[in-house]
Length: 247
Image (cartoon, rainbow, N blue to C red):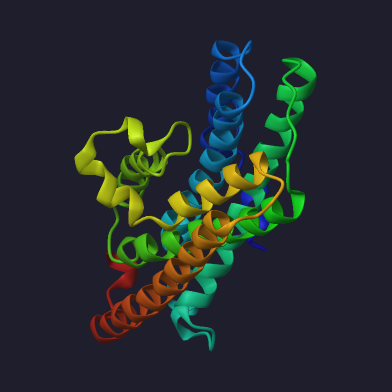
């Protein structure tokens, strides 16, 4: 249902499909004569931008849309928890963001003739799934705050690019100011992206890869637990005040 609603509202095509595509094409144009890590950063960066943009907008507008439609009261009256409802939308929209990566790969190989190869497809697949789930889990934490405000659109626009840059999607976090590194390392997608790049360039999955996988898995679980606690508090407050439709 979340996917059908996404396709029925074409305005999200611009920030979630067209924007990542444009940014990636610009990056590929700048580095069209370069192979290896630089080309990989451009491609994975565009795909990550699509997944994060979809997840953030899904989390931010999951409750906002219910307010617009006049169905917010029904959401709180259903047996399903608020976490499950918004979580399903976040995961489904992050999955839709994967289409960006597929299209970008085709453009890089066919349009720009950039030779790309995944050294370890099995490891790449594991890292990709866990990175997608980590992005969805991070979106859930932000969604708990979005429930209580009418300014979700402002928050989503403000959070999209900082997370995208700090997580090292397009370039290594080593190029960022040192004071941003602790924040970057606190983001689960940062570790997932590193695992993706390692699996892309190494045929043997060494301890470095599995360490990144362990960290992104542990942090994703922690995100979900934190989001669960936040949603319970938000739901209790909403039921006590009865003003969700007016917020």
